[in-house]
Length: 245
Ligand SMILES: [Ca+2]
Ligand SMILES: [Ca+2]
Ligand SMILES: [Ca+2]
Ligand SMILES: [Ca+2]
Image (cartoon, rainbow, N blue to C red):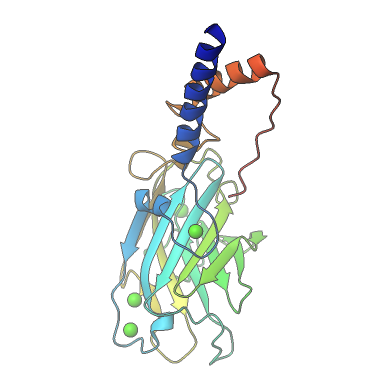
């Protein structure tokens, strides 16, 4: 009987652990929008009649972060024309970010925005896409291929250190975006005038680490404690797989 009760307890604890993991959320850079994006920030841009190729016409920009990475999702009104070269260059997108919220910062390529930008993130076609982070003087800080595009959705991940956000927590970051399709269409500026505020951490953006199995949460310590009991009682040894976001 005692053994039976022990088994029931172990199963119950295992269920707690499974439940905690099942509710873990993360962003996977695969060009597919997952539900975890719902907790982040976003800005929606109109379908401009002047941008005749909707593959160069920005629909929505979304952003969110965890303690290690800042994520941006770009959506266009038609399949993004990364491989359509009608000009001297393949298409590219700049995200201009005033990461410190101060007027300092130069080289304003996002002419629709207010300036003061400290970081420029460029996604450049054709596929496979590349992502480059520049400082305010267009010195390269980081380059990555942590990007994926499928149809009208493109997702990227950039380590927060490259953005100067070493803690992963920041205030409002006035930002704007610039999609140059080199087609002769008007450039698609987001917003049409001025900036939108990107942000990370509290209070307005989701901190993904609060909900993932790899970070602190209200449920996880109990689940880990339960699993530890099981591991001790069974001599089970586990190694936790590192999240590859
Ligand atoms: Ca995804
Ligand atoms: Ca359009
Ligand atoms: Ca647009
Ligand atoms: Ca600045």
